[in-house]
Amino acid sequence: MQRRDFFKKLGAAAAVTAVIPAMSFAAEAKLKGPNELAYKAAVDAITGGKTPSKSSKVTLKVPEIAENGAVVPVTISVDSPMTDADYVKSIHVLAAKNSNARCIDVHLTPANGKAMFATRIKLGGTQEVVALVGLSNGDYLIASQSVKVTIGGCG
Amino acid sequence: MAAARKSLIKIKPKKFKDGEIVKVSFMVMHPMETGMRRDKKTKEVLPAKYINSVKFNYNGKVVTTMNVWESLSTNPVFTTYMKITGKGKLTVTYTDNTGEVNEKSKKIKPKG
Picture 1 (cartoon, rainbow over the protein chains, first blue to last red):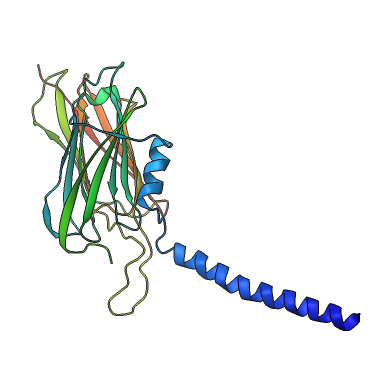
Picture 2: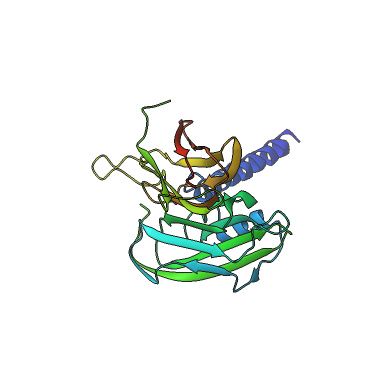
C-alpha cells in the first residue's frame, strides 16, 4: 500500500511540475508591452459590447503612405451641432496592429464648440487606423483607413 | 516633480472675439518611451515613460480630458477646438505614468 501511494504522489508531482512552467510561459508571452491590448478587446472595452456603425459624419484624415511610422499625423472631425442635447462625447484613436491598440481617448464637452481632434501617433507597421466616436445618446460611429508604413515607429 | 518640461499653448486665430470658436493646440516636449525599445549600445530595455492623461481647464471648468497611451509620437501635439466665454485662463495639466505632474497656462483675452 505504501509503495502504491508513493507512486501516486510521484505521478501527481510530475504532472504539476510539467504544467507550471507551461502556464508561466504563456503568461510571459502575453505581456510583451506594459499595457498590451488587442484591437478587438480594446473596441469592446470602449463600446461595452455594442457594434459601432459606419457613418459619413466622421472624417478621418491620415496619410495613405507614411514614410516614417514614428510620426503619423491624424485628424478626426465629426459633423455635430455640439449642443447640450446632442454632442460628441468621446473620440478614440486606435491602431489595429500596434501591441497596445489604444492610442488616445478624448472626452469632449459642449464647451468645445466643434468636434475635432488632431494629434500624431506611432505605427509599428502597415495597418489600419481606426477612429471610434461616441455620441451623447450612447451610439458609436466608426471610420477607418489603412496606412502604409515604410519604416516602423515602434522599437 | 521633475524639472519643468518645455510646453506651449497655441491659439488660432491669434486675435479672437468673445463667443468665437478657436483652435487650441497644446505641445509638450516629452520622450513618450514605450517600454519596448532597447538601447542600441547596452541592449537594455528603456523604461516606459509616457503621458497618461491631459486635462484642459478653462476658468475652472473642465473642457476636455484625454486618456493617453504610449503609442503617441515623441513630443506630442493635442489639438481641439474651444468656445471662448469671456476673459480668463486656460490651464493644461498633464500627468506621466511615472507620476510626474506638470501644468501650463495661458491668459485668454477676447477683444471686442
